[in-house]
Length: 134
Image: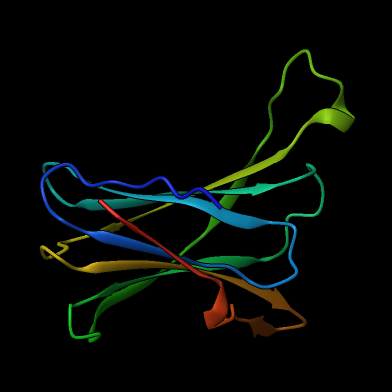
C-alpha cells in the first residue's frame, strides 16, 4: 500500500490502521498547519463505488513515548465523480478531515478506520499498521 502524507513545517509521522478484510481502506493521510490550527486529512479507496460502511476515522495524536495527547473522530463522505466513465469502472473514494489546536514536533498521527455494525464498533488489527514519515 502506498501512503502519501506530509507536513509543511515540522516532522510528523503518520500511521494508518485499516480493518482487515474490508474493501474500503484508508490509503493516505496528511497533516498541514494553517493560521489557526492543524488539519489532518485523508482518503479512503475501494475497488468499487458501492457499500461505504457506517463508521468513522479515529485520529489520535501520540507523543514520542506513546502517550495520547489528543483524539477525535472524523466522519468521512463518499465522493461521486468519474464523469464520462462507465459506472462499473469507477472506484470508490471517500474523504475525511479533522482539525486540532496543535500537533507537536515529532508526534505520531494515527488514523484508524472503525466500522459500526449493529451498534458495535469493529476496530482495526495492529498487524495492518502502515507507517510513513514526513
